[in-house]
Length: 332
Ligand code: XMP
Image 1: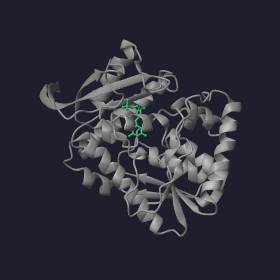
Image 2 (image 1 turned 90 degrees about the vertical axis):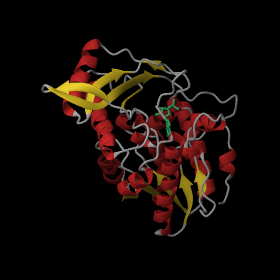
Image 3 (image 1 turned 60 degrees about the vertical axis):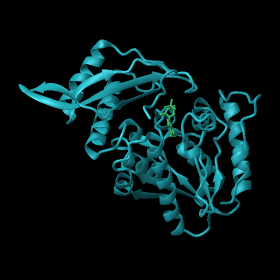
Image 4 (image 1 turned 135 degrees about the horizontal axis):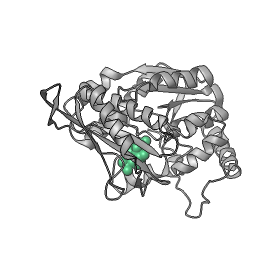
């Protein structure tokens, strides 16, 4: 691949934290300038997941190179309920972006079938992403760049060997894309300030983060379609209840995990043998240290009642009280 100098750019030790619109504007001006210098009149492909990072990257690139940006939204089957539809609505219909939607659900889930190792799962998802982009790129003329929403903690954690982040890795040798990573040196809170300054809607800027490997890391062990569906449905219920309780936007990140073991329960007088659903709700500013949100007992009880009665295959609901460290936010 054509290795970019961009890949070597590091956050300066004395860089002022971006907390104000003025600092964000200065950052945006700099980035637009360097994106235009880097890209020229060529096309850029962007992995647009719909999360904060890739949305901010999209907005920066639209400002810098307009229709030269080709956004690719890959539905890998590991997205939250309603998410692919929302990405199409916001970016294609409202922001008029050049957006290609790829339904790759079977392709990803077939590759992941039977794979239990977390790092192997991440690598499969990451590599498959690159392959999907390559397929799309081959259909286009003049694409030389691949934009990514890599942020600074991704780089640090990859360097420290804590976790392989698919978006901090290199491209395979046979691909000739150069990386464009305009938010690479930013912490998550800074990405939001920049997004706000770019005029993105609050619903996007303050959306909780969602990992690249999606619900795949919340379905620990080998992913099966039924357990994945249990993660997706329980996540949708959690988000609905947080919205109703006024917690959405106030709690930094919240989601459900459905581990790969079963326990005994009882429903309608009959024995059940089903999965538990674990709820995680956390607060942080830099994702390096994370504390647990204390939910009211009433909310936890309501969640337990709804999830066990509405989500097939779940007979218990548990709450994770562990901060980071010693736990990480995600389970894999
Ligand atoms: P961890 O589990 O490392 O998560 O404590 C810290 C934050 O990063 C998100 N996360 C990811 N984001 N690609 C991403 O873009 C990934 O592979 C990835 N893994 C974790 C996680 O959701 C949390 O907000």
